[in-house]
Length: 338
Image 1 (tube, rainbow, N blue to C red):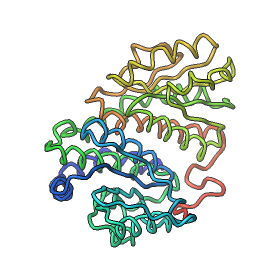
Image 2: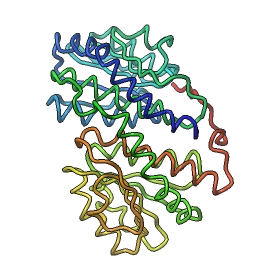
Image 3: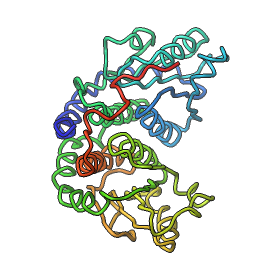
């Protein structure tokens, strides 16, 4: 996991250099404009899909939904998907439910796109179009480099559909290296502070909500921490009542509309005595016990960088708590569900 986290700056820089291949897929999508878009995914890829939902709705103005695979695999639903874009996101391309959803959607008229790190997978063959995230083989069970590369691939795809040239991510490899190098000491302080935590809440708004969800998953699967993730808005709609002095809150707050909306949320949890750790480019503007700063980018690109110190935090906490982050109990690299 350590090595694969450190590979990410080079992987992200390399993916930007291959932008032209993703742009070809984007041109095929733009040539047949869809009425709306659907995203199918599981696990970490589901968080990447949520990120793509924000991208598509905000940058392309298309209504977008997250598929419930069981409606197809267990209940046999076959809706009319003519003039619909279906993007299936799977790092391994090996989950039977996503394969079945993609095949069924194509049969029902959808334009299907597979986004995966495994070009040889059946998912790539099932979809009409494919985007290879080019992260290289990932050995650790916890997804790190495949997750950030998937985020970047999805951004490059959506940006190209709207006619963009990837300007906002041109230096993403350099920014990723700055993020990892610049956050090392802050992450170490956070590991020392939260190694004995029993309950963690991760929260964010907007694009960064995907980072909060991924943070929750990483902490749960590597450190076995009881962690829940909420949209900052949803946190105030009830769950905040369970926040007290024994609660650690990991708040993702980057510059932009979503980060600014977290101000009231952090004020509310701070009033209840929560121990707040902020991560992102807007940390200096937010209340918190500790801050992990991230270089500022366009708001829609921030999740690619925000997740890097979060991965390091999960790794450090796992080791500090006596765990083995490369071999979490009960987990395998490829999870096959239906």
